[in-house]
Image 1 (cartoon, rainbow, N blue to C red):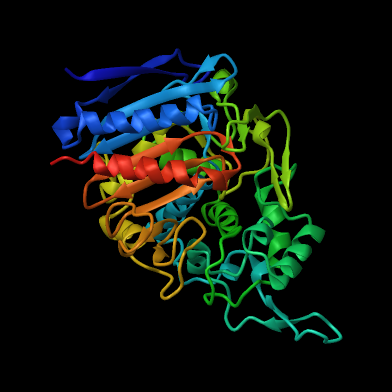
Image 2 (spheres, rainbow, N blue to C red):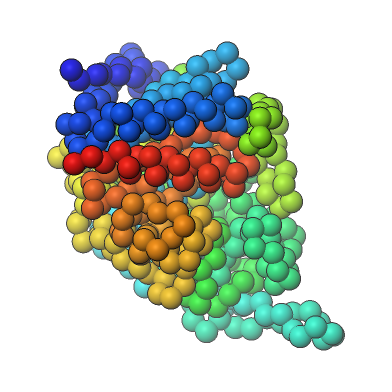
Length: 439
């Protein structure tokens, strides 16, 4: 018998609530093992019992059907996790932003090869920081760019633009020097929403030195935030309005927002700080870790100016599944075509960084498309299942993975800091969801 979850979805103040039926099929009907998916439940429950995480929502789909959608643990103190709990998905915003850019590409309004300066003049005549030899009178020098930063560079994180937090991820003198300019200019990573527009920040960022020559290194950073502002410039719409009308509405993603409607505030998961050893504490204020500033309570804001292309969206497991399924379907969902098959192949099935590796979340040999990490081979300590898997993650311990060969999707949403400690749990989630394939 098919199970059906009924998620209560608030449409708007102008409409009554709508019971949205999410159909769960029997796992065996799509070539998955119920017994093996139970192992996934057991592992997540063990982490909750050991107070490593407070709760999570996990979704596994195959062949266009959801076979596993399980809320576990707590969303907040004395509040059980629900299937429709809303999460800060943070950097899982980036694939949405890349999709917005490729929609404009398909509308003939831009090309990935276009210089960013064509649309944002502040990107003209940029400089790259180079460190001088130790003992030199000046520690660094600024040299002209060999070529302009392109939209393609932003989509692939080869623009030379950093995150402030990258000084902690990959410390070196050069990175610290570039980030010191970011600090002086009031640049933010977007995890705390400032009282300004994304355009204000991007224009300042464009005038600062790049970490590397455009196209020459893969460096995870604020490129997607620049893309968000680029969407505004090219489309003539505010970024959130463009994403709402061009992505969320066509895909029926009713619970995805940059700023949450007031009638949904109670559905947001709390954020929890964990040492992953049994000490778990609900976060009540900002989290500061070196240059990384996190403001989980910003998720409760119902309005504001700042629309980060790299960090702002809140969503649910079901909503993000609809986006992931559209990408797995080569651009179409429920009779609505968002992107062409060829564009999706360009985004998710093409290595755009050559010999470079995308190693922030993965080992060497992982590549990057246009907004997604791509598994190029299976010779890794942690295997996501097949060559061609594409995926990404968000800082509060949210991740998704799409396997085109097996037509499968795995989504894991928790709200647990710090991010890096969750890797072991995610690796087990992907291993167990993949090993549940039984056809």
